[in-house]
Image (cartoon, rainbow, N blue to C red; front, side, top):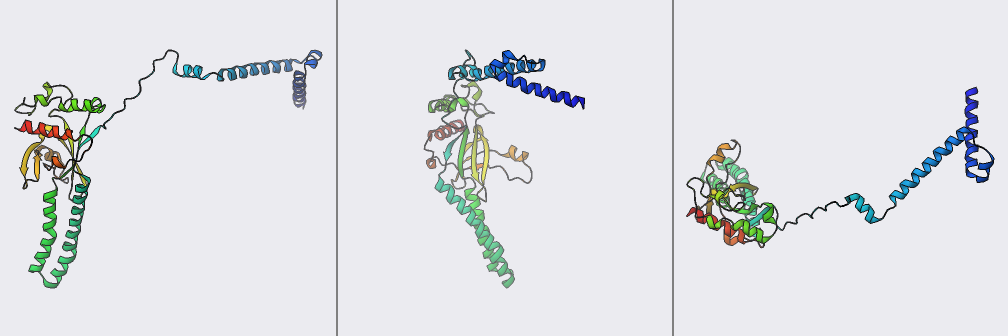
Length: 292
């Protein structure tokens, strides 16, 4: 009971002292108790601290930028804007050709499904093993096999990975592409091109191309091929004009994976790249010069 009364008296003294602080003429007349003097000192400290922080936050934009960046700090150079992407498309077979072949593959699959699983079982049930059953079976298998044989080497895209310096301008890209064309005649019996001895960073036998073809169901298939692996050939009635040896790659593949693509049909006249059509021409010249 006595403790509560003492606390109540302290609260009354604090209220009285706060009123006295607000009246200057009472401040000189009535002396403040010890507790009130302590409270006044705390209030003055808080007021001075708040005023100092407010003054520090109200500063000019130049001062603020100097604080953020630091006085005399070196400004970072602006990021380099690349003209070409990291994966440069150097060959495009054309949207019309790609769309037509994709529709042809899908249509052939529908024809195979219809004749193999609808027509042939009906004739087999009605006539048994007859000539009609053989005809319907051939109508299902032959179109699918021929389309797969003729269109599997068809190349839709070819991408070339570029180093950062070759992406800055077309002039730097030309330097990267043509850096080693002059040394194409220098060959090695095992590696094909003595790329290490020429200008660093140019086209060498180790340069990789990402060649995209279409599978049996018109799904894109990506093949990473080194430039030294491509050889100019003439196969499949002139459909295939480039090939490579896939023995080592097939040995590394799992049993359930499709074999690697070994034959490619790349028609230079059908290249529809409007930006840099000369890149693939230079690469094709390099392949031809190395193979001769």
